[in-house]
Image (cartoon, rainbow, N blue to C red; front, side, top):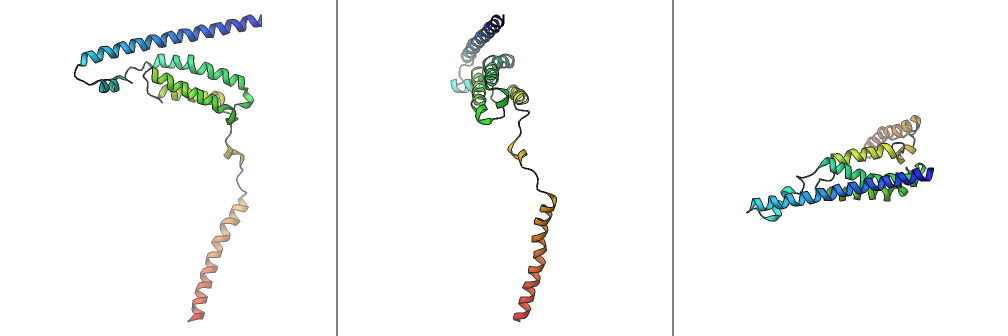
Length: 177
């Protein structure tokens, strides 16, 4: 029974990915057709100006978010699950998965004519960090603060030596005269 359920989930994910791919291809075709129509209507504006004007103006944030979920997050979630929760804070083991996620998001943004980074990507990265890395400490957390007595001695010692040095300089200059 478990194999059947697992297989059904796998088939369901595949269908979800394929539907997302079809939506992405449809959007790209519509965007390309709209850009071609705009270029024909403008007449005397050169092609590079037209491309620059419309490249990022056509970002469909809903499609972009869906594409990120389908193409990037499903893969990242699977990679992190395979890695195991005990290794989520080991940056050397997580780095390649994190880079794959970043490159995937950049790729989707480029092909859907969206700026990168943008608010959608930022929100998704915050969710990723909350889900996978919120319990990870930093290396600075491992170093404790020095005891107050040590800090006090290391601060007062040089400060108390300064008046002694000033006195010695004044005394030495008066002896020479």
